Each structure stands twice: as structure tokens, then as C-alpha cells.
Image (cartoon, rainbow over all chains, first blue to last red; front, side):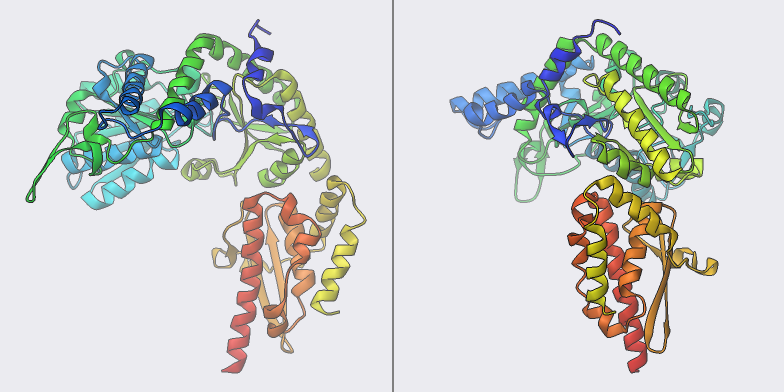
Length: 407
Length: 141
């Protein structure tokens, strides 16, 4: 293994020190939510101990300090994802809200009856349902790009599906079930030759691959804090300034207002136009700490280590026999969905849990994809940089136990 | 045996195991003796929602008593449904409606099973009681 300081890193995550069912906790549900390092936990408690207040409007000391931290974090996010301007960074509750915001505001502005929104069959429900709902309201249609058996997008079909009715393409950077890294840059370049904007769901990619808005050139990009070691309830919507300027507000009230008269209201400028209500300031403090933590480790180092973990787990699972890996794309993040012989994933999950290992079983909020594979569900082990090869060995032991019990 | 006697019987069976593995092995064993639902009822109409695995449940009455049959695509779930059926099958709608199903807690299944699973368990019990209510209403008309 590479000289990644794994033992030191694990010390930063207090939750990993506990025993469950008398065994050391093995946390392999990182695609659902990641654990938080003490640096993030301290940032949140620190906020409440010294900085808590409502931001943006107070002239008092605390408000100025918290506002500064909040707005500095916006600039930090801007640099983290290499966006052109900090006014393109909107704080939201998470990816789901970011996508809902775009679906609602973009739909109102640009979608007419007969139009089409192109997504893929491997999307998370949060990148399906907002488009479905918007399209129902506006008489438009959602179309699904198919995939190949190995879990890669069918790019030939994608190109065929783009036509003059296509008004937006919304696609995940990484599949939460398959681990596939999609060729989003290729998709964006192709879409832009037809002047079609593209939204990228970065929920599963941000903590593994980072993101570069300048390089990708996508029009919208969404991610959640809690999947990148930050707290729950904070996320980001990146949008190109020209689009964010053109879109109507999503929700109203609070900081998004400029002036209110009895007969009309004027709205604040970007990014505040899209941040209605009192913001999640503690979440932003936590997000700042998480980004600094990731930058401290280095995204390249994280990626290299996680790829080693992924390869180790894939080799072990393959060598075990009678394991079907769902999602064998050439480019994957550190996540494996699999089936153990004919054992129902639920049965497997119950036993694996009893061995102290947290995996996810079910359809992973991607029912159309599970349906496409004609399987009932999968067992999913998703790894983070604090996971170890020894933990993967424990998972293998648990799988052997499952096979013994249900074989 | 009454419903509460049957529950006590199951509780005492489970008290023999101090290891979770044995408990689950016993559930897997129980899955084998589940009265399997007739193929023609294995349709969406008979599916119970709220479970991670699929559960089909059917009920019929004979001499004023309700008899259940079921199936699931997961074995542990089959074992659990069979426990419920052992307790409730062959009783009158009133007995089923009034049954207190606290044996689930006593055998340590609710505390050991994940919340999603507990919800599934709750849905199964609710569905069995709904059958009882339906048969009771029908017989009173």
C-alpha cells in the first residue's frame, strides 16, 4: 500500500473508534453519508460557542464575524471547484434542493410543451423526480439515456437522443449504485455544440474526484456537504452567472429580497437571490472545515488511496467466486455493488450488519436502474479514504458467513 | 393453543439461543415451514409495502377462523412471516384483532433488526389485522 497516513487519518474520525455488536465498527456506507473529522465537528461547536448569530444584517461584531466567515466560505467553495465568480455559488440544503431549484426556475423560464429533458437510466431519484414533476407541469418529457451491461453510458444512444426538442441535459458525474464515472466532459462538449445547457449531479463524485467548473464547462453543478465529510443540511448549487441571472427566484423571503412595497417586491442580486430565509450558517462553517481538511490531505492522494482500496476489494470479491458485481465500468470510484450467489441482498445485509459492518442494501434510490438490471436490489459497499484493507478482509469474512448461512 | 400461549412458546424457543447467529439460523429454519401462498396470489395486489424484501400475504377463512399463507424473496423475512403466521393463523377475526404482538420484542427481533425491517414487520402485522377486520365486517353484514 502507498504511504497514505491511514492510522493518523483514522484518529481524526472519533465515530470509527466504537464497537458495534461487540466488534469494531466497519463503515462502508460512505456513498450514503460520510463520517465527520474532529476538525468539522469542532468548527460546528466553535460556531455556537463564539460566533452564533444571524448573518448579513447585524451591524454588531458577532454578525460581522459570522457573515465574513460565511462569505469567505463561498469564496473557498468557488476556488475549490474553480468557478469563475463567487456569485455563482449558491448555498442550499444539499444536492436534492439544488436540483429542485434548477428544475423549478429553469422550467419556468425555458421549458415549453413538447420540450425534452435528457437524463440517464442510472440517475438517483433526486435527479429524476424533480425533472419528472416539472415536465408534467409544463407538458414536457423526460428521456432516459440507456447504459451498457457493464454500467457505462451508451454514448451512441446519447448522441442519437439529442435533438431540437432537448432543452436541458441532467446527468450524474458518478453513479451511486454502479460507481461508474461518466464521461461528463464529452457530454457537455457535445451538448454545447447544440447550445444545450448541462447540469451535473456531483453528489457522488465531489469527495472522490473534486470538480473543476472551468475545465468541465457545465452550466449547473450540484453537491451535498454530508457526502464530503461536512454536516448534513448544507449543499451547493453552482450555476453559470448568465443562467442564474436569467432564472426567476426559487423561494422567497429573507436575504433574497431587495425592497418590498405593498404592491411589488424587488429581488436581491446573485447569489442572494437564491438564498431565501435564514441560511444554515453552522453548516457553512462545517463545510469550510471539510474543504480545508480535504485540501490538507490532497484530492490526488485521496483518489490514489481509494483506487487501491477499490482494486483490493474488487480482486477479493472476484476471487471469492459466485459473486456478481453490478457495475464493472473501466472508470469507477471506490464503490462496489454486488450480489452473493442467489442470496437476497436483504438477507446478506442483516448478517453483514451483525458482523459490525455497515453496508447498504436495497435499490439505493435508483429504482429505474435496478429495474434495468432485473435484480431485486444490491448489496453496496462504498469506501472512503479512512477505510482499510483489513476492513475489507472483515467484509470478506462476513460474506463467507452469509454464504454458509444461506448456501 | 391461544395466541398468547403460542407467543410464549416462541419466546421460550428463542430463549435457548444466546448467540445472534443461532437466532438467525433458527429463523432460516422457520422459513422452510412457511405455509406458502398459492402462486395465483403472488401478485402486486397481495404485496405488503414497507419491506426491503417482497412479501406476499393471503388470508382465507374456514369455520370462522382465519388461515394465512405467504411468501417472500428473502429468507429471513420468510422466517419472520412464519412466526407471525404461527401465532395468528387458525384464530377468529376478534382474537387476531385483539392480539398483542409483544413477543416480537421479547424474542429480541425488533431490537436486533434494522428500522426498515421493523417497519416491514409492522406492515405485516397491520396487514394481518386488516384481513381480520375485513372478514369480521363481512361476516357481520
